[in-house]
Image (cartoon, rainbow, N blue to C red; front, side, top):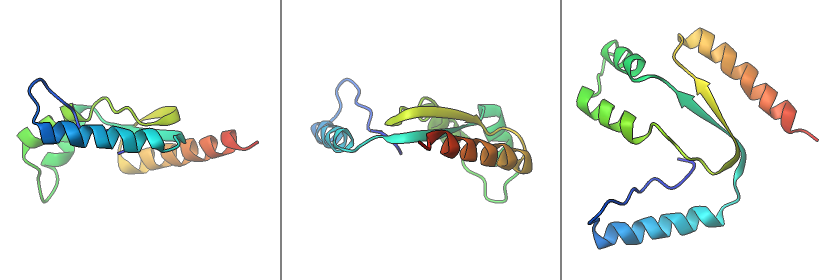
Length: 108
């Protein structure tokens, strides 16, 4: 991930608090990236894709992970959200265009 991921809740174990503090210090010491592309897929698309896979993820686990990761906070100068809900060939074409545009825009 591009930022701290340990989430503390009321009553979190002391070891988890220590790890969260360490993780935060590590990320605070890193320079941020210029661009971070966040791939966004609605839950219904994630569930549909999962159901069509040969090896399926547990639906309850997928929903939990989806909710835990739905609002990423990457350490970057520019956060770009990419809608990745189309089929692979269309998404890949749009992604390549976005990627090269970001690279060209970052050149002096």
